[in-house]
Amino acid sequence: MYLNPKWKILTVGDGDLSFSNALYSHIKPAGLVASTYDDAATIEEKYQSNALQQLTSNNVEVLNSFDVTERTCWQRLGQHLASFDVVIFQFPLIPAFVGREAFESNTRQTSMNVLNRALLHQFIKYATESALNPAGPMLCYITSKDVKPYREWNIEGSLNSQLSAQYLGQMPFDISRFAGYKIRNVDRDKHVKDTSGITYVFSSKHNNELSAHLTQPNYLTANYCSLCRVGPFIAEEDKNKHLAAKKHQQMLRLENHWQQWLNEFYG
Image 1 (cartoon, rainbow, N blue to C red):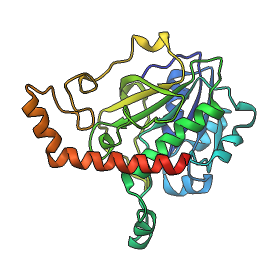
Image 2: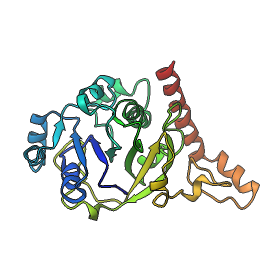
Image 3: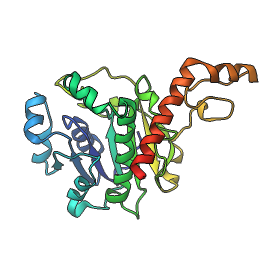
Image 4: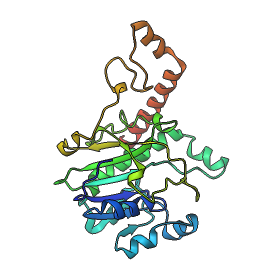
C-alpha cells in the first residue's frame, strides 16, 4: 500500500482503531482522522485491546458510530469535508446477523454478496462526494482478501458502476509495515489470520504518482474470464466449456443480483 506522508488520510470502519494508530505511529501523515462503525462504549467493551484512548491522547480525531452507507454520517466530517487525499477501508465485511430471523429478514430481497458490494459501492460514492479534496489525488483504497467470499465481489469489475471514481489498479498490502495492526473479526475480540491482502485503488482522476505502484492482474486481460479469474483459454472450445460451467453460471447470477440492486438504488 503506497501512502504519501504529505497526504491527509481518513480511515473508516477501523474496528479497534489499531490500523489508524499504526498509520499515526509509522506513516505520520500530514493529517489523520479515524472513524469506526461502533460507538465508543462498544469499542471499549468489544475489544480488550483498542487504540481509542491512545489516538485521542495524541489529538487524532475519532468519529464513532460512523456508517459509510449513510450519507448523513459523512456530513459529520464538518470542517474536514472535501479535505482528504485518501480514504481507506480495511478488510470491509458486513457484520453477521444475530439469529436466523435477522439473517432471513435482511437477505430476503438480496444476498450477503450484494450487501457487501453495496457497502463498498456506497463507501466509494460518498467518500468521493463528501470527503475527498477535489484539488488532491481523490483516492479510495479498499483492502480485501483474495479468497472467497471476498473475491466474488468483483471489486475491480462492476463494483463502481455508475460512479465517477474508476478502478485504477491494485497493490499488495504488507501488514509488516503497520506494526501493532490486528485484522479483527468484525463481531468479536479476536483477530483473524493475516491472509495476504490486496489494496484496490479507485479515483475520479488519473494519478501519475501512483502509476509505478499499481498492477493489473492477468485475468482482466483478453482471453480470460474476469468474473471467475480463470484463463487464458487455449481454444474457443475451452472458453465455451467454462462459460457453461456451474461456477461461471453462479457468478453470472451474482452479477445479475448486483445489477438489480444498482437499478433499485439509482432508480
